[in-house]
Length: 498
Image 1 (cartoon, rainbow, N blue to C red):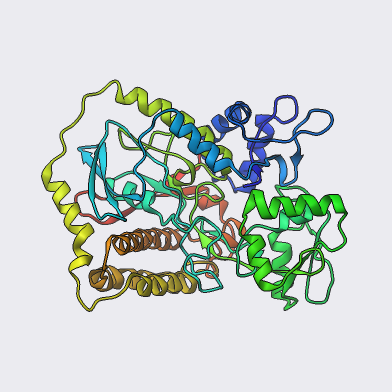
Image 2 (image 1 turned 90 degrees about the vertical axis):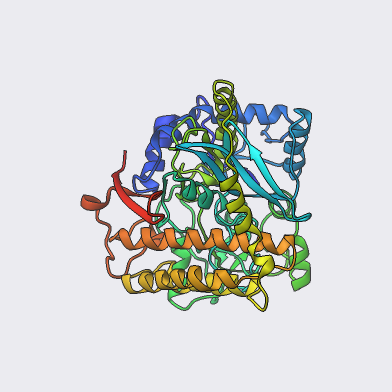
């Protein structure tokens, strides 16, 4: 991670300006109150992170480096950010359950009272009783199948499989933005890491197969810089493959690029290039369109929350990529994580603990361990590959009614037949089965929401060939997804942008 994408520095940026640009870039699909809260607390959060030892470098004037990836972006150089965060957890003596994945939320009427979990190393089934619960399990990174065909070769974290979305849905919380399927962006071919903005902001350029530079056509949220659509134009013209060319950048810029690519962003990229025989100082770097995922950080998918991170269920909070705060990026994870922690603790101190019924626990335990008793069934990787290939063919743009209906037919078939045939030989594979079930829930939500929105919006992220135009008159609205707790069926509702 090479920076905080959203920081409103007093005297340099304004909240009003940021909000206007965000609303414009997202076609009005924003959680306005939460976005205002994010903007207000972004700079104080940066200062707190500095106190923890996270490095935000400054120039000779003592000012933060801004604008490399948009004017609200502040450069960060902390390859060790995760160990630093972990040390904060340890210093506060917070209990951590390693190798443990939540499987479902526990409810008492309209209140969440904890969750069940699986230790996917030891196979222990765990009951977590809680007065308040925060969902921070990311988005659905393992959604579409990457062009490489490697199940875990995704842009977003591959261990994020929509578990938070799935658990919130089954508990009866409201979700939105599942037709806002983020991705398809041009990234390092077969490795799927961000590279264009790092290189172009340091003097590099994007070139096509003829060696011609791909030039920016329009002003974007990030400024006058070659955009995804600019590159897609050349791809549609058959001028691919595209490449990043940094062979002629200055020594100083080359040093910065290599530092960002190989330490701050993704350390294993250096190993990948070495294996491919690529020397970025001498060779062109091939780039290609990557995978798609569901995400509340980069995109606009998530559990509906207010500016206090409260969901539509009592005792349940959601933050980061799990929550609906369009394009909150890494800043949002920090800001709303802090807000949720304070609010959840305050709420927990004000209520009594509810008793957990054995019926709900036993039912969930039976569901979790059922694949251990399946013989001659499907291995998890087999069904996951097939499911994610269906996403590529029928869910992502360009979409149309026929594609989406076929996708829903596959969803029903998978749920009725294939999921019941999944087998697991150990606790680790039990976890894989649970992940597939979460992905499958996300696929259904994405297909139904995409079918409902009879227009095209957000450029290539929701492009309906049977409804190719944006329809602001009828579709300045969001699609709300919620489980009908009486029938068990998925219900959709329409609500105007606010």
